[in-house]
Length: 124
Image (cartoon, rainbow, N blue to C red; front, side, top):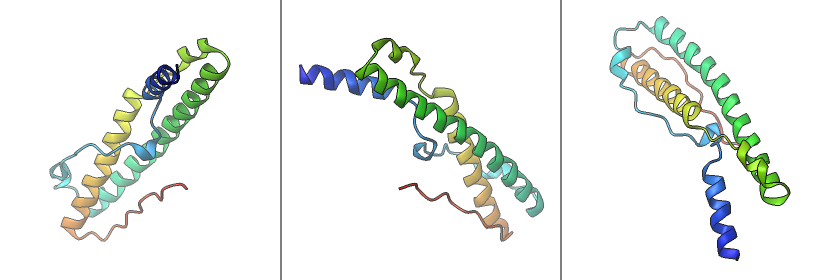
Protein backbone atom coordinates (compact mmCIF):
# COMPACT_ATOMS: atom_id res chain seq x y z
CA UNK A 1 0.00 0.00 0.00
CA UNK A 2 2.87 2.38 0.81
CA UNK A 3 4.45 1.69 -2.57
CA UNK A 4 1.18 2.43 -4.34
CA UNK A 5 0.84 5.72 -2.46
CA UNK A 6 4.45 6.64 -3.28
CA UNK A 7 3.93 5.94 -6.99
CA UNK A 8 0.66 7.92 -6.97
CA UNK A 9 2.28 10.87 -5.18
CA UNK A 10 5.27 10.93 -7.56
CA UNK A 11 2.97 10.92 -10.58
CA UNK A 12 1.07 13.87 -9.15
CA UNK A 13 4.22 15.84 -8.46
CA UNK A 14 5.48 15.18 -11.99
CA UNK A 15 2.49 17.15 -13.31
CA UNK A 16 3.17 20.10 -11.04
CA UNK A 17 4.60 23.35 -12.33
CA UNK A 18 8.32 23.92 -11.85
CA UNK A 19 9.57 26.99 -10.00
CA UNK A 20 11.15 29.51 -12.40
CA UNK A 21 14.59 29.29 -10.77
CA UNK A 22 14.70 25.55 -11.53
CA UNK A 23 14.11 25.95 -15.28
CA UNK A 24 17.25 25.71 -17.40
CA UNK A 25 18.00 28.18 -20.16
CA UNK A 26 17.31 27.14 -23.73
CA UNK A 27 20.19 27.58 -26.15
CA UNK A 28 19.99 30.86 -28.04
CA UNK A 29 22.77 31.74 -30.47
CA UNK A 30 24.53 35.03 -29.70
CA UNK A 31 24.89 35.52 -33.47
CA UNK A 32 21.47 37.17 -33.58
CA UNK A 33 22.86 39.96 -31.40
CA UNK A 34 26.10 40.44 -33.38
CA UNK A 35 24.92 43.56 -35.16
CA UNK A 36 23.53 45.22 -32.04
CA UNK A 37 25.32 48.25 -30.67
CA UNK A 38 26.11 48.36 -26.95
CA UNK A 39 23.13 50.66 -26.40
CA UNK A 40 20.86 48.25 -28.29
CA UNK A 41 22.18 45.32 -26.24
CA UNK A 42 21.40 47.25 -23.07
CA UNK A 43 17.86 48.03 -24.25
CA UNK A 44 17.26 44.42 -25.30
CA UNK A 45 18.60 43.12 -21.99
CA UNK A 46 16.21 45.44 -20.13
CA UNK A 47 13.26 44.31 -22.28
CA UNK A 48 14.03 40.60 -21.88
CA UNK A 49 14.68 41.02 -18.17
CA UNK A 50 11.36 42.80 -17.60
CA UNK A 51 9.50 40.07 -19.48
CA UNK A 52 11.37 37.39 -17.51
CA UNK A 53 10.30 38.97 -14.21
CA UNK A 54 6.63 38.83 -15.25
CA UNK A 55 6.89 35.29 -16.64
CA UNK A 56 8.80 34.05 -13.57
CA UNK A 57 6.20 35.50 -11.22
CA UNK A 58 3.41 33.78 -13.13
CA UNK A 59 5.35 30.50 -13.20
CA UNK A 60 6.07 30.61 -9.47
CA UNK A 61 2.38 31.29 -8.80
CA UNK A 62 1.47 28.22 -10.87
CA UNK A 63 3.97 26.15 -8.90
CA UNK A 64 2.48 27.35 -5.61
CA UNK A 65 -1.08 26.71 -6.78
CA UNK A 66 -0.17 23.22 -7.98
CA UNK A 67 1.57 22.41 -4.70
CA UNK A 68 -1.51 23.52 -2.74
CA UNK A 69 -3.86 21.55 -5.00
CA UNK A 70 -1.66 18.46 -4.64
CA UNK A 71 -1.58 18.78 -0.85
CA UNK A 72 -5.31 19.28 -0.62
CA UNK A 73 -5.99 16.48 -3.09
CA UNK A 74 -3.78 13.92 -1.40
CA UNK A 75 -4.83 14.77 2.13
CA UNK A 76 -8.42 15.97 1.94
CA UNK A 77 -10.22 16.07 -1.36
CA UNK A 78 -9.07 14.08 -4.41
CA UNK A 79 -11.06 16.16 -7.00
CA UNK A 80 -8.66 19.02 -6.20
CA UNK A 81 -6.06 17.05 -8.16
CA UNK A 82 -7.82 18.07 -11.36
CA UNK A 83 -6.71 21.67 -10.73
CA UNK A 84 -3.04 20.81 -11.19
CA UNK A 85 -2.07 22.56 -14.41
CA UNK A 86 1.61 21.80 -14.99
CA UNK A 87 3.84 24.26 -16.79
CA UNK A 88 4.67 23.37 -20.39
CA UNK A 89 4.10 26.69 -22.21
CA UNK A 90 5.23 29.09 -19.51
CA UNK A 91 8.28 26.98 -18.64
CA UNK A 92 9.28 27.03 -22.30
CA UNK A 93 8.94 30.82 -22.36
CA UNK A 94 11.13 31.18 -19.27
CA UNK A 95 13.76 28.85 -20.75
CA UNK A 96 13.75 30.96 -23.93
CA UNK A 97 14.07 34.24 -21.99
CA UNK A 98 16.95 32.84 -19.93
CA UNK A 99 18.62 31.73 -23.15
CA UNK A 100 18.11 35.20 -24.65
CA UNK A 101 19.77 36.78 -21.63
CA UNK A 102 22.75 34.43 -21.89
CA UNK A 103 23.13 35.24 -25.60
CA UNK A 104 22.92 38.99 -24.91
CA UNK A 105 25.52 38.58 -22.17
CA UNK A 106 27.84 36.73 -24.57
CA UNK A 107 27.40 39.44 -27.21
CA UNK A 108 28.16 42.03 -24.51
CA UNK A 109 31.41 40.24 -23.67
CA UNK A 110 32.44 39.88 -27.33
CA UNK A 111 31.80 43.57 -28.01
CA UNK A 112 33.40 44.64 -24.70
CA UNK A 113 30.39 46.81 -23.87
CA UNK A 114 30.95 46.54 -20.13
CA UNK A 115 27.30 45.90 -19.30
CA UNK A 116 26.83 44.20 -15.95
CA UNK A 117 24.45 41.28 -15.62
CA UNK A 118 23.37 40.26 -12.14
CA UNK A 119 22.46 36.64 -11.66
CA UNK A 120 19.55 35.91 -9.37
CA UNK A 121 20.61 34.43 -6.07
CA UNK A 122 18.97 31.14 -5.11
CA UNK A 123 16.41 31.41 -2.34
CA UNK A 124 17.23 29.43 0.77
